[in-house]
Length: 138
Image (cartoon, rainbow, N blue to C red):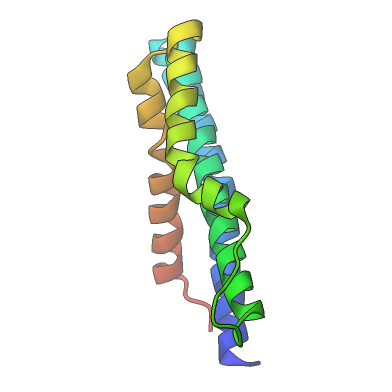
C-alpha cells in the first residue's frame, strides 16, 4: 500500500474517532455532572460538547474545501474558494459564542458548564492521541 494513502487513511480514522468521542465524552460528563450538580449543569456540559463537535466538523469541512480547491486549481495562478467556506472558517467562533449567549440568556443554562463542555473536543483529541501512541498501526 502507498505510504501516503496509508497516512491519509489513518488521519481520517483519527478524525472520525475524535468526532464521535467528543460527543460520547460530553454525554457521559453531562450525565455525571447532571447527577451531582443538577440538570441545568449537565445540559450545559452536553451543549458545550455538541458545540465543540460542530466547531470540529466546520473546521474539517473548511480545510477539506480549501485543499480540494487548491488541488483542483493547481495549474491556475489564483484559486477560487467558495464564499461559504470562508464564512464557516471565520465566523464559526462567533456563531458558537452567539449560541452560547442565547442559551445562557434565555434557557438559564450556567455559562461555566457550557464553557467546560467545549473542552470535550480537547479531551477527545488527547484520548485519540494517546491511543495512537500506545497502539500504532503499521
